[in-house]
Length: 365
Image (cartoon, rainbow, N blue to C red; front, side, top):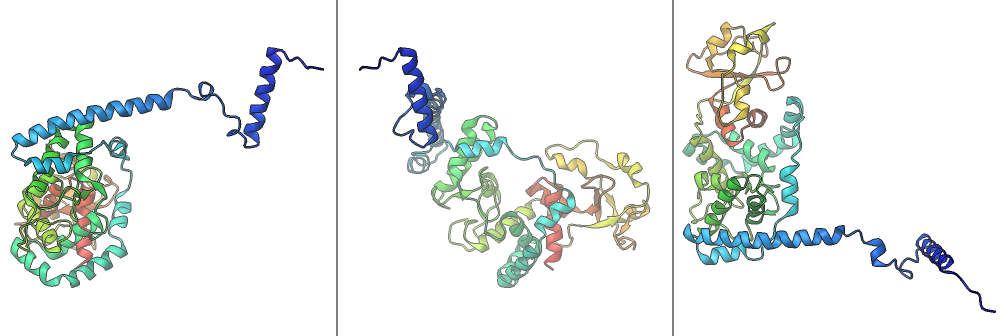
């Protein structure tokens, strides 16, 4: 006897078999037809990536041509740019930078940690001779050089693992800040062309900050120093070059070794009412400069009722000008900061960063 099954019954049976197969792990034995499982999205993604790689390759041709016009050797361009592809992770990090929400106390606690204080003191003792020499040569106290080193890369432990050339090329191609990153890309190629480092060894952050003091390529060209005299400005592996480059950056930013960074102070009751008249009318370039008040001498701040944290008067130094900064607003801590604080903000335009460097340096004395 032959059992006849209609088309509808056959489809129902096939559906039941496929469902049972999926439940019991037999989907490989009964594969779902491609048309039934493919939404078309993976193929579309692959096509988009292929189109992006093609556009990136065409864009790199323009980079090569401009590089040659800038005087960068063909061999350098070939070694640095051949085989490059965009790094998706770099674009994601650039577009999804987390909003900064840490308080002043949280930021300082994370960076002026017991480990950094202990390790910083050990590094000062370890490199005492080189640091003393560099401090005297550039006019920057050794403790500030080491504090910057510690906060930027944990004393050289965390310098970044991205290819700087590839990361900068990705960001320059992406378009959000293409003009800036294109300039930094050519700066990086110029550094490679000069023989300071190879393209393969030029590692850094996703945004292109390099070495143990996290210089952007433009900062490298402006401030990096060949302190050991080997013909290379090696901020990746030569400690003398790292220390001297940091000191040179601060010196050229206006650092004075007869001053410290500033101090925490105590404000009188109702001082918040005076804040509007003490704040600058405008600040170009660095947004955080708006958090710093106009400069006054220490006697002038004393006349306004500002005192040291222990309630004692401020030093009687009419030659020393300072600005008031309230990192968490009128109800938070108050700092009086000097010219060296502003010099540190030229390194990183952040009140919290500059305060962390100063406070860590104080702990390293």
